[in-house]
Length: 240
Image (tube, rainbow, N blue to C red; front, top):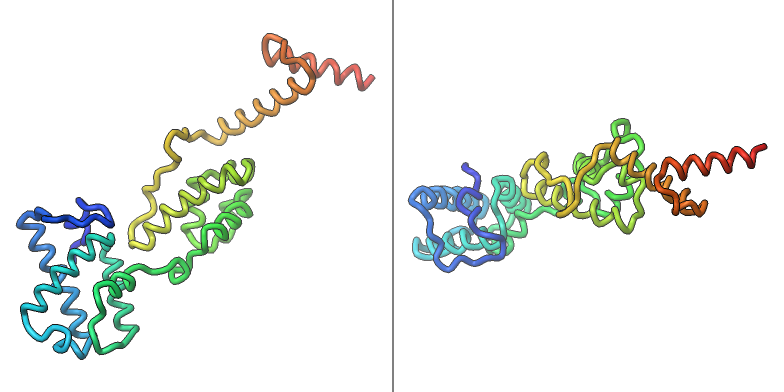
C-alpha cells in the first residue's frame, strides 16, 4: 500500500478542503487506500452488513473517512496499520466510527515506550556527560538530547535549555507516532546557530574571562590580554 501522504500532503491537519482537486493518479491511490481499510474492517467486524446495508451507504462512508484522514493528519501506513490493530484488539462486531478509528491510529507516548517530555529531559541531563556510554530508555530521548546539544544540557540554565529540548523531543515523538524516520530533525530553533564543541568551549571560557576582568575592575583596559596579564600580576604579588 502506497503512503497515504501521497494524496494528503497538500493539506494541513485540521484543514477541510472544500473541493480537493485530485489528479487521476491521486484518485486511484485514494480508492485503493479506502478499499484496503474497508476490506480489513469487513474482516474484523462481523456486523458489517448492519453498518453498511447497501452500496450507497458504503460509498458515502468511504468519502467521509478519506476526508477524516485529511482533516486529522492520518498520513502514514504506520497510523493505518496501528488503527486496524486496535480494531482487532477491541474485538467488537460493529464497525467503529471514523472518529474512533482516528483515535485508534494515534498511539500515546507510553504505548510506544516513550517517556513524557520532562522525564526525558531529566534523563538527557543525567546522560549528557557521557552520552555514548549511557543506557538510554529510548532512541528518541538520545536524538532529542543530541539535537539540543550535550554541552548545552550540562552547562545552560534549565529555563533556557528545557524549551529547546522540549521542542526537539516534540518533533521527534510526533514523527515516531506517525511512523516516520527521525534522522532529518532541524537542529536548532529559528535564529539559532549551531556551534562545534570547540567553539562552544571557547565561548564559555571567553565568558569566564570577561567575568574575571569585570570583577577585578579592569574593564577599562584595551584588550583581554592586557587585562588577564594584570590579573596574573595581582595574583603573583598576593602569593609573595
